[in-house]
Image (cartoon, rainbow, N blue to C red; front, side):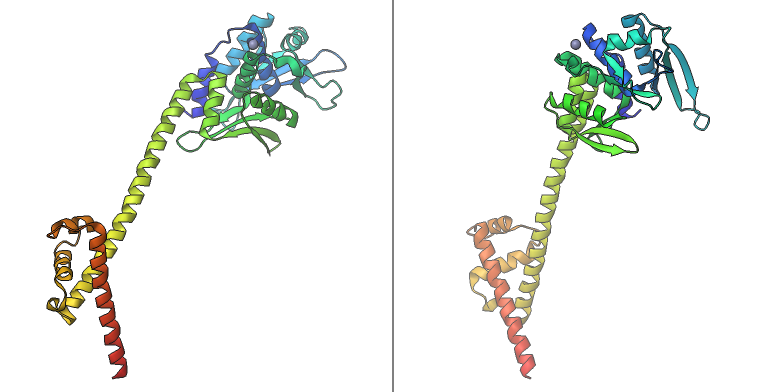
Length: 325
Ligand SMILES: [Zn+2]
């Protein structure tokens, strides 16, 4: 199951405590999943469409409980994709479409010539209470929201059909200190949030606490994996450096042994040269401990550099004399 479905299933089981909030959630369902058709100045026919069966049931029972209206239900299966099912709820004038709009504070633009018409929240001050704003966002997520699998990326979006709706969502998110952005995509407007922290806040606001815990666990695991990777990368880099340095030193020491002779070296350099040859894999600290008396890291480094220099100088001289000959 997708993470979106997990969140939505959890949200469908939530029942807002206050009536005010239940109406707000229903208002969101109407705005984001609903349309109104009006024939010749009569009262509107309202259609609510969703592909989520649990949400369809939730809307149906809310309308019944809050407005005492039993919508007509139609289920449409796509002919091409058999699994693709749409649930449609119709509220005709006879059933009480005007009452539904009045109770939820939702309206349509009466002058609009296009049919069917968009539904919008009639009174912008309707969401004075924080509880109602939360419920509206929950409804908006159920109606047109989706969230990425947190294992992959952090992305949450709410789809609207008009720029005004998208801006209204962005404004409400702003009242919870969430900065949303809006993009246009294939004729719809998407209000979206990025970053794990914002998405955690959003899930908290809409009351998806189980999904929130799941997301937090993924975030913690991801964070831990990143730290481990960073340490491993850092250690790998250090190891590579140590190995390369050791190879260069051993090569130079062998050169000295062959072309100059260890007996020409001062005692302190000969000691470190012999130990370096014997202990290829040891780092500088470990090499220093093998000397008597033991020597610190920088002392060992200094002597090995001296050996490098001796070998380099000898090679240069050899090159020159060959050139002269
Ligand atoms: Zn409320």
